[in-house]
Image 1 (cartoon, rainbow, N blue to C red):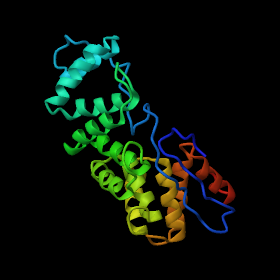
Image 2: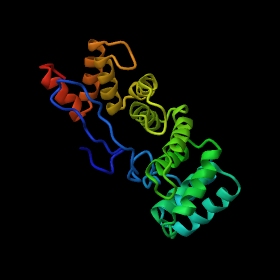
Image 3: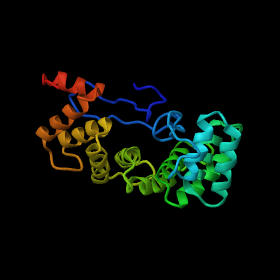
Image 4: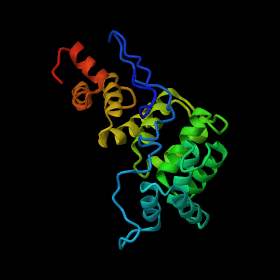
Length: 242
């Protein structure tokens, strides 16, 4: 099992391979250094007086130089003016309890929602996570799916994976293997190893798509080449090289 604070919580259901089971689990809060809740980049080399930098980069430069209160004032001002990136950053800061702010899920959700309603992809994904886990919001997988879909159509790979997961399980939606294949296919094209693995299982079983063992093996090799343990194990059981 992967670390709980990786991109997802995965519960492997792969058994002795007399049958094929999906590598599935419940989406979870990701560590803030991972993409679902991106950290504020501390290594970005931006100076407030540089030409061509936007207001959020100026705030970021203050943050990186230790001037957290100045950065916070800028982000708060920009957020109140309707800047979705500043709103998203406030959501992160309140979630983390950072830059002089106490951890406050009500404020975090408020700012994530403001940004998400303006189409901010990561904010949409984060709201989905909070609805899917019941963290700061009433547990509601159906609403989580709505937000993930908005992020997924913009190319958010973890949102695509989670949509595939929920459609494959029938969580918050009717069970729909074809939809699961669709979203895992999009995530697999972006190189997400877990999606490549799950999509391979769907091809091997002929579930939601025509059976195609050769394509399953191709996808498992792509996944295994990224070090994905379950894909490596499957290929070993089948006496195939990664």
